[in-house]
Amino acid sequence: MRSSLVLVRKHLAHHWARSGLTIAALTLAIFLLCFVVSIVTTLDRAVNESATQRLVVQSAVSLFVNLPLGYQEKIANLPGVDEVTVFQWFGGYYQEDETPFAQFGVDHDRFLDMYAKDMRLVDGPTPAPGETLQDAVERAMAGDRRAAIIGTGLVEEKGWEVGDTVPILPRIFTKQDRSAWDFDIVAVYEPLKSNFDPRQMFFRFDYLKETLEAAGMTDDMGTGVYMVNIEPSADPGAVSASIDALFENGPQRTKTSTEAAFQSFFVAMLGNVPAFMGSIGGAIVFAVLFSVVNTMLMAGRQRRGEAGILKALGFTDGSVARLLLVESMVLCTLGGGLGIALAATSQEGVRAAFSGNLPNYAVDPSTLALAAVVTLVVGVAAGLGPAVGLGRLQPADALRSEG
Image 1 (tube, rainbow, N blue to C red):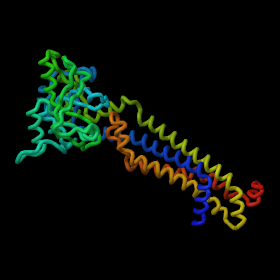
Image 2 (cartoon, rainbow, N blue to C red; image 1 turned 135 degrees about the vertical axis):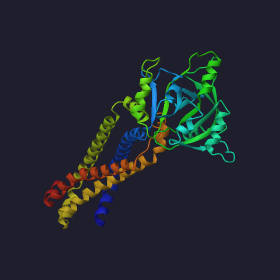
Image 3 (cartoon, helix red, strand yellow; image 1 turned 120 degrees about the vertical axis):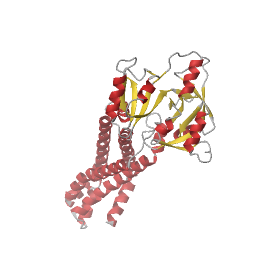
Image 4 (tube, one colour; image 1 turned 45 degrees about the vertical axis):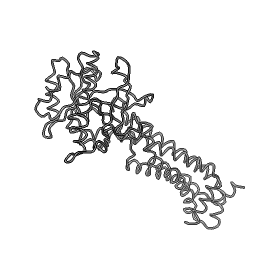
């Protein structure tokens, strides 16, 4: 076995350019396979970890049609409803940096309680004796109309911290003087679920509402959606039906779904992503298989004379065949291993590059295991045919072809 590895190493080193290009192609292919599979698993995780005991109430016409603010109290009084908050998309950007991140206006006096299972506060004002950090944050938000909470992703990306005043330029809610909206950061949160984006800002909805009303820019402020936490024993389907029935005759009909179904809707908007990504992954596997097969066929042709000499010296058919199979496995192990390592270590970079679409991108251990299996299968499949052919070659035929 040791002598076989020495021969394999010398052959790979002698044809270093071909070996290097094959390893590079394998590295890229296995990385891309991990990437496309991870996109699917990331989207699936976002849906699976969404709350089934939280409902999203939107207009039955479109997400772009606001619901009346008077709906909130009526929803809160329905059986099975625990808490309700407005959830208004702001749609702004920071200075000249137009990298998208979400900002939502919420009811500051209930938002933290409603999302306690989705995030935890990691920074904020110093709690008074007997207070928790959440108590201190709620007190800070109650005392500052411009108060906002941001995620750890924005801290890392923008360099913001508690105590900063952040100007956000609006795309939708433009002031008369077209100036920025100033928000005072009072706390930082860390997501507890993969579907909860760390690059979000939550601010007081009443700051937005009262500012616009004071400027006479809106007579009937509404909200994009209501987020509704239902009681643990309540049936989401029954509560959803009761909400929609309550507003069946308007003035704005509603469409209520669980948060998980709402997330699924956005995934569906991307098309049949799993099938599309699966076809790409399959194409990658076939491409890399053909690449390695071609390399091993070339190696087999070049080693006919060497095989003839080895057999003449007493090497068995099996030992000669194993040389080519081991070479294929070494190439695939090096290329596949580098691709797997690249996929595992590049997660932060991918999250940063696709922060607007895949803020929670992650490569699951099962994906890395799949890539390892694919690497081994390609190594065996690519080397087996040429190895069997070389093993069956007669010494005289091999030496005659070289002569």
